[in-house]
Length: 176
Image 1 (cartoon, rainbow, N blue to C red):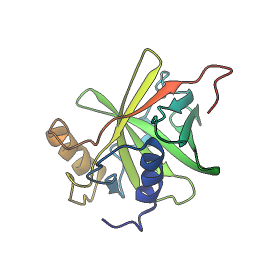
Image 2: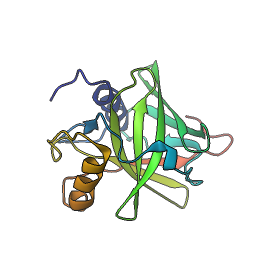
Image 3: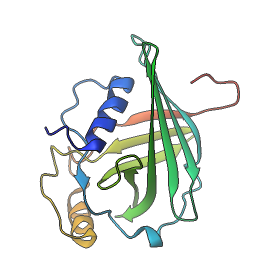
Image 4: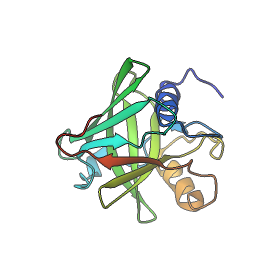
């Protein structure tokens, strides 16, 4: 596993905070998004502040803030804290639809460049996200169209996505 890719480092921090056991892989990264951001639309269920489910045996905390950046993209801020050490990561993201499933194309604002991909769902104030695993997707693609075609063909296979990370909608008065 190569850790020099910025998205892998950032996602590793998120996974540490959420204490997801036995992670098999890291997020798959690509030079290309799944679709052109110019055709994206804001999904109204995503904006807000979300608190990560906290493991019982950890003092780790995580908070996700999602705000429309423009009419097509989101600004995403991840705040993590463990043992008094706080870290903030900033991203931009937009939604692509593949096989009627909504996927986020995420790009680190501090690093730029590569995209990672997350399926998501929101139901009853609970946001579930899971990234595409580099253990499943080993290929590099030379266009968004080829990447999206691969996703369409393979995304329903076991192991394509890692385990869901769970966030709950923050209400005023909730602590991160």
